[in-house]
Length: 317
Image 1 (cartoon, helix red, strand yellow):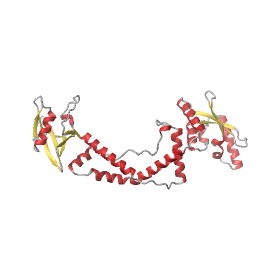
Image 2 (image 1 turned 90 degrees about the vertical axis):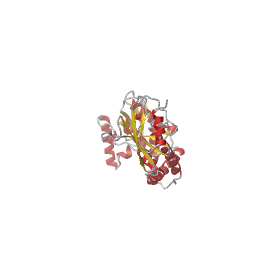
Image 3 (image 1 turned 180 degrees about the vertical axis):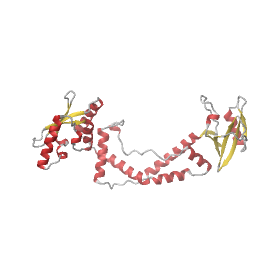
Image 4 (image 1 turned 120 degrees about the horizontal axis):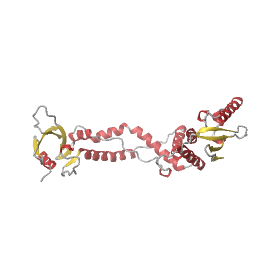
């Protein structure tokens, strides 16, 4: 016995008029066809004839060149049924996936043809290096050894179901549509590609982070995961007259490590009296000698970092 969808497919191919298809339970479903550009739209009416004024049709399929694209399969299958499609029938979502696969292949060719520019400013290069340091010192799910910046990005230009139907009807040409979309982001992609390739080059050159920085980052992140928020940082300068310690927030210490920036008083625990005394002494020294705290509280002047929980040494110069 033929399935309901097989009977439907045979009728669609043999007529462009409205038609009825009987279900196995004896109920009749009426289908009405309407030409729309190069394709036909098919609407279904359940339990009533299409000419009844209060009956609302359901848009269920599109037909183009004897190929039937099901838009709503609820009328053809129960939710728990195994869907067996006739050879000339497919769901519109499958067709959308096919179009998007073609667009993806076209995007690869478009992206690969984009030229690479090398005119980066010094600050731009430093920003890229900081991005690399962030990925190496604060890795996410991607392991350090798997980091690559020159991978081709995914294609953001997509055809949805509505546009796929418009394409079947001849209302739009998806190739022209996608070419227009690609051209709209040409400059953005060219800049991004140039940056990606430059960052990969900087990554391969190495020397972006030191072994000590990697070890310190690992220890700090481990402490942070355990619930600790603050560590003790000991400072001294080359003349050894600024010796002292401050309690610093782990989050801010990691930021300063990645960005290769000095610690700021705002990163410190202002509720700790020893920290406040040390900052006051530094500030007084800075005012008397015309030196900024930013130039004093650098990683070069850090001699030791230790945990407040067990006094474990996290870093020692």
